[in-house]
Length: 547
Ligand code: G4P
Image (tube, rainbow, N blue to C red; front, side):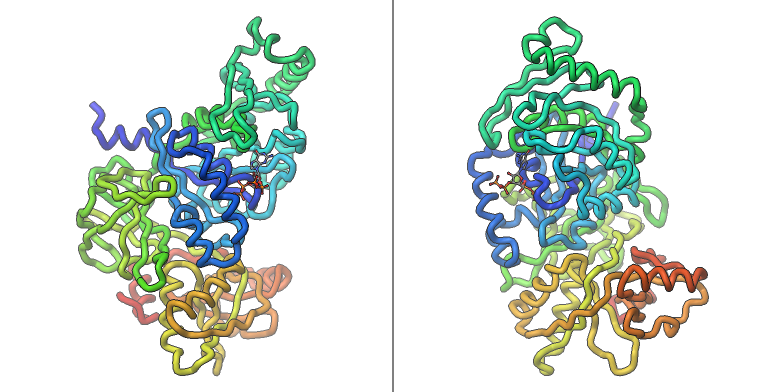
């Protein structure tokens, strides 16, 4: 007999959408919620439009969005699945958070604009998913407009991302002639009829077997001939679908549709939920932890400051890995070596925050954080272990931070420390004599504005940021590494992260490549090497943190 825990694990799907701004992520998210019955759309589409006009002022942005966009973990029910959609901040607030969210997801949906194909931000996010080897599903959007030919797009995925696509369905027509999609597995055609210009309601749909007599009632002879030709080409010329390769992220199941008009949203959701993986076991220093293990465990993957700057408390987002979470329970905070009460959890249902009583593997809980948590922290019931850390990613923009008022230096330091714990910025120490001011590194340049704004408003200190000409940071490992090798030289500089690990900052691809060629004995890593437990404690002591 299956236990409640096993049943809850089996019905959970936790995923994130990765895309370049404007591909339609917000629209698709709304439509998934519409089909999940979680929202009524009329108002929310409008709210989104208003929001789009204010993308640079971070605080304003937060106010307008409430908590729903940057921190959102949306949960909805669909066909007896409990679906958790983790939102990855895109647009200008693209940051390390975007990457880190992927560490909490079991699969990703890569959203592509049919007219634009693979764009830069999609490529970066794809690479992060690839590193984790999670299944990646592709949704080609905006078929209601003329875009690139589907075969071209398949080819582009292979050329640019190095992944073969397997079309699970195939579009019938494009632009104003986009009529529906053909489901290759079921050999069924879904023909849609519009439910409104922005798809405020679920779309009308008729599903007919391709080989049945009624098909000619819904498709014109020309549409039917084209579809049959396409289907034959795919069936004869393409690979067979391999579930195993899809599970390992080696091929990407591909779908076509239009989030705006809802065409193809339901067929996508149905097949996606069948193929998407359940919550996976996670590696720890004591071996893998399966989701069905009885005791509760989870890790912090994101920390968000309170919306109200007068309060310094934050919300720590915890991905539940195993067992059952019950409101107010105690768990072992492994890094601090003490038991903590998991207080004020909340779950994020559409735009509302509601207190939750329990949560299961794959779910995300938001804990009240008075400064207890750091990204990567493990919480576990009973005998402690540590989950492999949440990776820190290499920033791409750098600046030296100076306090404008020397008397407020302490406040600046405190602010920097807290923002680095939240993961908004990374702090590096310069190693050269006389260079005392820290360097901050960020993944998206908007984080500099956020940093300046928040240090000023929350810590009452004005700072100056002197931008540095570096574009890459690499953690360096290797027996023979001597930080002096890469002393400041104009196009590179050695620094130290907060765990005392050395990195070199490089001006451009050329400087990085040059160093790699000259020093084959060293490894230059874009992701921070994982600290061993003992090493982490001593590095933290060395860095002046809590052991
Ligand atoms: P994002 O979150 O990925 O940045 O994209 P978002 O959903 O905000 O969509 C970006 C633009 O693309 C919006 O247009 C949106 O309506 C449009 N869009 C999304 N999906 C589709 C689709 O399937 N077909 C077509 N034709 N357009 C789509 P906008 O003009 O910027 O805003 P709005 O006035 O339409 O809200």
